[in-house]
Amino acid sequence: MSVQSHAVTELRRDPTPESLAARLRDAFASEPDLATQVHHAQTSVELHLEGQTRTVTLLLDRRVPAVSLDEPGEVTLRLDRAATRAYADGMLALPAALHRGQVTADGPVRKLLEVDPIVRRLVRNVAGSDGTERPSAAPARDGVPHALDPELLAIETRDLHRAFGANQVLQGLDVTIPEGVISVVLGPSGTGKSVLLQHIIGLLRPDAGDVLIRGRPLSRMSRAEILGLRSEIGVMFQDGALFSGMNVYDNVAFPLRQHTDLDDAEVREVVEGHLDSVGLLSAATRMPGELSGGMRKRAGLARALAMNPRIVLCDEPDSGLDPVRTALLGDLLVEQHARHGGTMVIVTHNVLLARLIADHVSVVWRGKVLESGFADEVFASQTPFIRQFLAGDSAGPLGMDV
Ligand SMILES: Nc1ncnc2c1ncn2[C@@H]1O[C@H](COP(=O)(O)OP(=O)(O)OP(=O)(O)O)[C@@H](O)[C@H]1O
Image 1 (cartoon, rainbow, N blue to C red):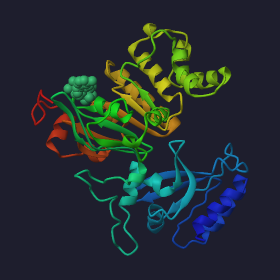
Image 2: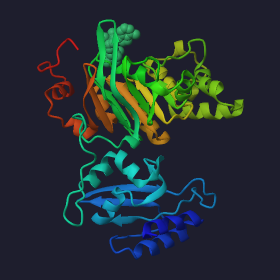
Image 3: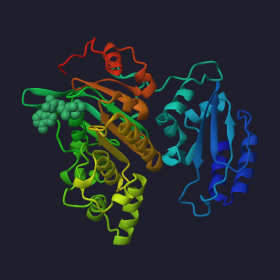
Image 4: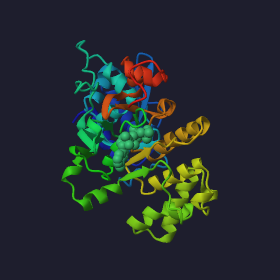
């Protein structure tokens, strides 16, 4: 058994933070490749490389009752290059990982590393002990840089085609949305972003191609399975899509009453929690017609989150909002993602919002993904169209026609 898995086994068994720290200290101290600094009881691993540091917090399995997470043990481990590489190669498997305060990945740490843009970049830059460079993520596919491990995709579309009469809207669209991060699907108006979103939730069927949700192709699902899938996906529609005859509380409670067996008290606890977190608890009894545009969106977000879905899709969440309210909504989306984890997909043409919130970006133009990758890669793109679009320039390949 490797020293790492030995330590994890002990972590699983041991109930107290102090003894967890002591056992980790012992286990890792004997590992020659590991520059270990165990400060005190803590469960975070610090990846440090050339001045850049990222702390990954490793969470003890919540299902192990002996481990109290109210007082988690804390052990900080400083990893040298070889150890960082071992992490990247998936040699260290842990029960779960915390990111931004939420569990974002179960299983091998490699999964967390691949979806976390900063850690991923750190790891990609790690040279092997033999001086060879570690391959920088998976090889490029179809011109999309750094194609992601298919096992780590929340959503994937393959060669998606869809026309409305003579209007060929989706023209072989391949989008890859990694799990666990905020992805922005960015592109000019009328380019097919909302049509894409409707395909993802199975409201529209493609003429050709397929949509895969966490590896499952929609084309092979029955109507009932697609309906079931919708409870795993929360959708925040452009205008909030609230039921006009119900107050805010009942709107948010609606999916819980439809799809769960929760009693009234349990529904109340969930709904009030979500309303509180979007700042609408005091507006719970108001009708949608009595809300401002921003409030309607926040109510729509609370409803999208009500079932605690693993994927949340937001269609143009900024539409109709002024720049300040757009920024505030952006902060709220980041905050909610940190709180709930999972995958968040934002469809928008708003470059400022994308810059504010995106971990990952797919740029769509004329029904295809033009470029896709982690946000700083895409924002540094030299592709003329993307440079023009990001700069909001009138000169360039993008004209009045989509
Ligand atoms: N149900 C429909 N019937 C016919 N045409 C449609 C339908 N839905 C969308 N379209 C057309 O598909 C094209 C793309 O629309 P879509 O709403 O996906 O664009 P978008 O990229 O989301 O733009 P925006 O940023 O302005 O919302 C448009 O030409 C639109 O008219």
